[in-house]
Length: 347
Ligand code: ZN
Ligand code: ZN
Image (cartoon, rainbow, N blue to C red; front, side, top):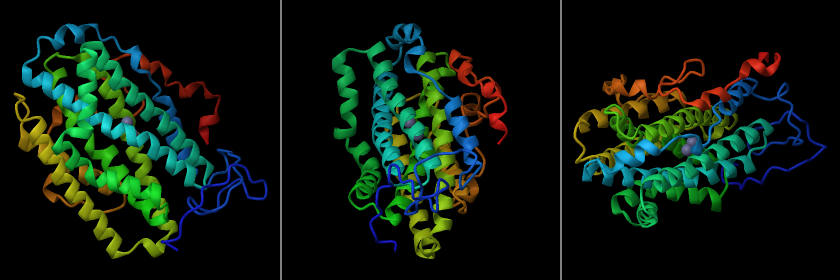
């Protein structure tokens, strides 16, 4: 079963039930009634995702344009490198979200992944938007070349590239689960040393426009990570033949390998930035890895890193719960209007 290629879900098949018979490799008509889905609590996840709607050009970059010239050489260089890194994550994620949706035979998953893919597209646009606000076209193009040319970044992305492309070539249920593991790493850990750099600038009142945008991306990625962890657990529960010690070991190995690569990357890209403690950063990466493993129903592998060692980051991220006003109080919060739903949200 695990080596059989999955078929793409039928677009519309009236002979099949509306409520899917399985998340992948099952049957469903293609008609989505949110009141009759296999995992009813996923409706709330969909609403939270939709409630986070924002667009890049709502953020005013005038102060950032002025301030960019006043940053140190190292800060400017790292700024461009980190944007280059983030673009290598959101690019493939736009398409991977779409691919998961094509093979998912549950219409609620198809819709949730469609929203996630849309948000990844906005994240990609936002990197072009911030760079075009502050540097020349040549410098913008150079930052977007890093994912193809920087040896440390290529090494850091190598395993995720391999797994994401394996899913394209061999869409088995096993590759689906492995792709979700890398998606969890991406949404829950790979972004965060980059995010930390921008929050570090923001706490010195530098490049606050960019950090505002990063905090919106951060909020989206936390939701994406939550959903993918849920989808992983549910898919594994539906495919108990794959829930083996061997597979669990594979997941733990990928996590520890990815943590090592992320620490190496962070020490390379943040080396010349004053005020970021690289040991704390390594602890934060391990803390994020533990958090994702817990969400995926697995055990922590860094027992000494169960607490966030960079508490100051919580002012910018990690405490979004859909009710608080976020730190920067920008206008995109006004899109969260679940109370206007006339009771539809009481499901
Ligand atoms: Zn993203
Ligand atoms: Zn994401």
